Amino acid sequence: MSRDAMSRDATSSLAEQIDARLAAPGAMDAARFASFLEGQRRLGLVHGARALCRHLRPYLIAEQDYAAVARAAERIAAALERVARRALVDAALAEELGLSADERALAALDPGEGPFLMVGRLDMLLTEGGFSFIEYNADSPAGITDQLLVEQTLMALPHLAPLRGGQGVRTPAPHRGLLRALREGYAAWGGREARPTIAIVDWAAADTSAEFKVLSELFSAEGHRTLILDPDQLDYDGGRLAAGGERIDLVCRRVITQELIERRGLEHPLVRAYRDRAAYVANSFRTKPLNKKAAFAVLSTPAFAELFSPEQRAAIAGHIPWTRRVRAGRTEWRGREVDLVELVLGEQESFVLKPNDEYGGKGVLLGWQTPPDAWREAVRGAAAQRAIVQERSRSRTARMPTFRDGRVVEEEVYFDLCPFVFAGRMEGAMVRLSASAVSNVSAGGGVTGLLIVDNARAPREELSHV
View 1: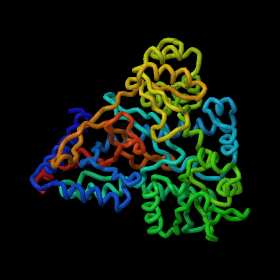
View 2 (view 1 turned 30 degrees about the vertical axis):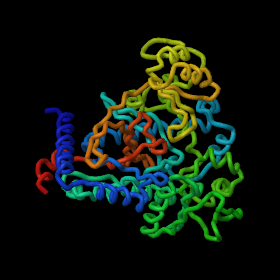
View 3 (view 1 turned 45 degrees about the vertical axis):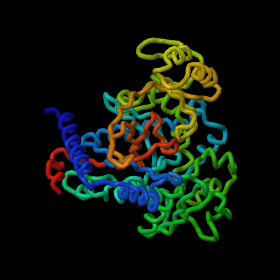
View 4 (view 1 turned 180 degrees about the vertical axis):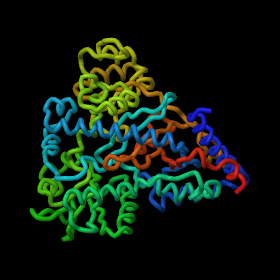
């Protein structure tokens, strides 16, 4: 039996055991499901007021498959970092990425020593042939606490509780990866406080405010005075960044760069303190080029191949779908030279159109679901908007149990795995589930947990008898 077959057997066997326990009389009823959802709202596993986990099984992945994803994710993240670093000194590449004058000015500011990118999240689709990375959130990645809260809610349900801490399975800890990376970055930057005061900064009305509360509690438990602040609460006197008179050493920046600059400009206290190195800011404002979807066009276009190492080029070839900026001209597709606009119009069902600088699935058009007239109009206007076109990655779907109409039922869902990379190292992933092919949480998608299965030591039949 091949290792791939063993991986499928181990995870499939465990999934069957979980589902059998869930189907047992009394395992799930309306009251327990309602309590499960309310527990999420109480703990903060929500988007706005909506409980995010409605499916009753975590995503199971074999240890060797998780390791393969980690290798590829770390190489792609490193390749994207090379793109961003080159864009700092290469005006043509900055233009290719679609960086505005303000974004270039911010990126030109030297934040000091430390990792180039503290935390990023790759959006990854599982396909029939493997997996593809389709986007990178390197500005303000959300979902870092989801795994922790899923363990306190989903994994506490009777049909899953025997797995917690059990032999042959483990759960990742992205919240630990974040704090470790923040501490290491602060020290490399030159920070001297043993337990720096941390400010989590985003607009007060952000839909992810519940996540900030969870992070604040985690940081505080590790000895860090932690504040959740709106950007307008920050003050900078030319020497120290503060809020209400209290000094801030480290900023966990969640406010999106584009929104901060558009609303408050380049002289905002956070930008000025960052420029003067009066506080450590992570992610830095140098990461904006990584967040442009056009960065995937740079990865995918052969003309830029010299930017990357052989290992990175192999990861790009294996896991980055064909991606281009939409504009008039010739390009290569599937081994032949074509007119780019004519290709995208003529092969509509093969492509996705994306704005260069949006998030949460905003403005994404799936060719196979878009009326032809709307598609033509979008393609004609795409060049002026610096949009990108990406070849469709045919995502696998999965059947996942949930509770509806008084009983446990299975739903066919799209799902994606979104690995977190902290200072170059992968730790955990956000697992998103959706009835539609656009699975962003802000577009109505949900989440579940990630359970890593050791094939040699995974539970076989014993779970069903616990």
